[in-house]
Length: 306
Ligand code: NCD
Image (tube, rainbow, N blue to C red):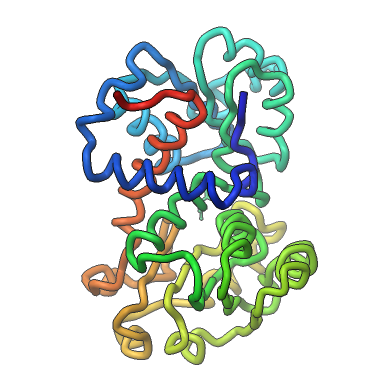
């Protein structure tokens, strides 16, 4: 039995197969409409989410399966003091696969150690968000036709943003990747990412605080919001929250074939006027998130289309 806890749990070849399956699902959704008939997905969300939870639920429903779960820790027995280990043992009796989001780093890993069904990490604290990374990889591959040989700009809260941490791990395995890390000095990537991933894998990267200078060099711009809920002090959040605002005017600096991605939710960092720019890909990215989660559920449940 396999879980998905970390973006590196699948090899580059396995990710390619998963993305191929997701692209086939996009082309021929009817072929997959009943592959999970009779199967159940449990969504165990101890932290708020709109997209990720509904994306998982939509994915399972599209495959013919059904869903159960809870949307907040208050609505679960966690409020009574139940451990993640006990909850997953119980859920293992009710469902065939579980997606878990938790504010504590490592909670889905603990769950996987006590589970008899596959566990998917749907975001653990400021640590990892592997299914957002699969979404990002599918989006980049679909839009650019490749995952190698490109300059990717990651902009915003690179310290607390788990989507950024997971994406850096994943991109570091492809050739010819160059990263421009755009953030205020206080929100730079954690040192374990800089030392253990970027330097270790010899990925060329620059850490800068100016978005305008970086824009003309990018193939992909990955914008992120400042992660309010992970700040220790509100004053810092207020000072940093509007560090970057991508406007139509700034987009004049970007190449015609650059795409903007964002894991969403957006706060102020992309002004709504940018939405009509053909390079704005963040709502298309949401659709790719459903296809890739369908492919992931099928892969972990080992079901195939006839
Ligand atoms: C992200 C997350 O939860 O980390 N959202 C998502 O799952 N698409 C990004 C964020 O909350 O900023």
